[in-house]
Length: 151
Image 1: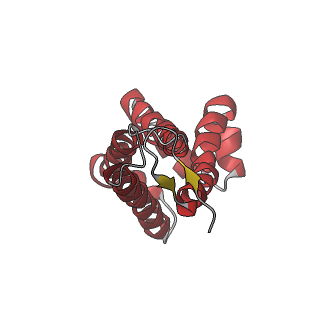
Image 2: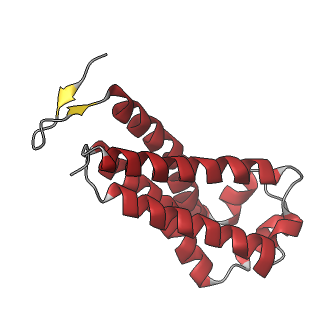
């Protein structure tokens, strides 16, 4: 196992921080790409992702505040990952804000709109995977901060 010394604290940077960071960049890149392409290509992108006309109509009915929540969620997760790789202690609160944004998007989809009704069968599985991923990044960044690896 190869470790590098942290410049300010002298604490060793564990190999798994780099692994989690790289996986996080790859994982969160899809959300950022999806957000960007949805805003650039709109319905064309959504259809290319397999959405039906009913799903696209429901998606396009989202209020502006939900688009902002989505942006905070995906871009916050990417920023949190970059901060984690930079060993910056702000990674933890940024991941927390991203998780809160994701939970708000679930509340909107399942309780405040008809979006859930238009989702394909089994969508909840992917929603659960994303939620677990968000919780993992919050937990991991908190653990790294508590160990003094994030400054």
